Length: 442
Image 1 (spheres, rainbow, N blue to C red):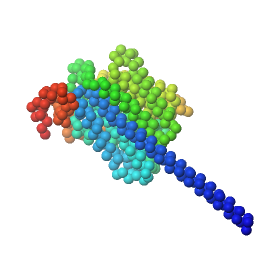
Image 2: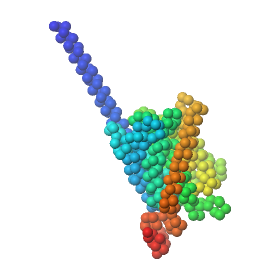
Image 3: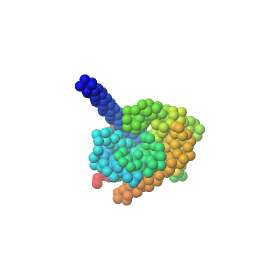
Image 4: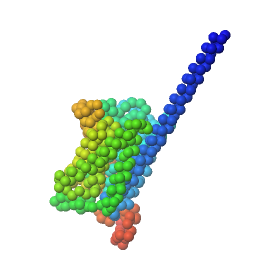
């Protein structure tokens, strides 16, 4: 009997120890999940704040007569596009993906677990970033309604389908590019290059602004109205990128430190690269060049921020800054009018950064096989996004002209599209005259 009581005591003690350990493990898991959720919510807020950066930078680079129109496009595309992405796009991108091409469930805000809400929130901010890139390129001559329809289609179909090839699925299955080993940690190609190729298609459909190119094809400079807005927008985007890249861990993890250090160093190196490029080609160093250079560095490092060492992050950003300056000059030679330089920043620098993520992959430097996979992803993204966007913008243009009428463009889209002007103390009598009010009538 004594031995039995002793044995029972051991069993009870063992049970208590196991129960206590299980309780601690459960509490630790719950605590980690809560910490992860807090970090993702903060990161999503930082990415959302990037919309303010885009709005300031783009409106500053546009003329004052289009300031409201640029702000309205940035504000409205995130509002309408977020609804479309949450209801349709998230399922296409992250739903169960048995074919490797698109998701097949989790539509209409139907998550399986509480954690899914955090993923939906964070990924919605990414989709908004991809869609809003085109607004700056197509500024000052694109109608408001047609632009918004295109933005919703980009966030609802074009972006999530390609995203499913790289990042799908969060539940079951995997995208076909992911299966090849394609590396794009936070979206140099998935988000930024895709948005830039959409912008390129839009710029070709609407054509250049009136007066942008002379009769002999030489470009004329059309200065923006507020360089302070441009600088402030650049700083806000830089800040938001710490959430963009760091939040892509989807966890409060020690890796965030290296990711955000690489992000910062690449941005700094991008500005340095832009400065050098301007000197080498004999061009005056303008504020837009330096800011776009740093943004090119941010875009470039987004693919490999988690998988390369800081020295290679600096190299990636430095080359990205050079690519941005030379890419902007190339577009002018091709007579492509990009008001804010979004195509070289997000497209060219994004493509370079994606290739760099393969070249500078920690533990497997300069792998030819990995480089080929990266190049495949870059080319596939261009074909999918550019042709898809051409069909979207072209289709809209057939139904209703996407480009504003010449008179509207000359007056400014603030008054002709929205019936107000951003700076009423300047030129009010010129903006509000009988002819302008007449053309505003349906």
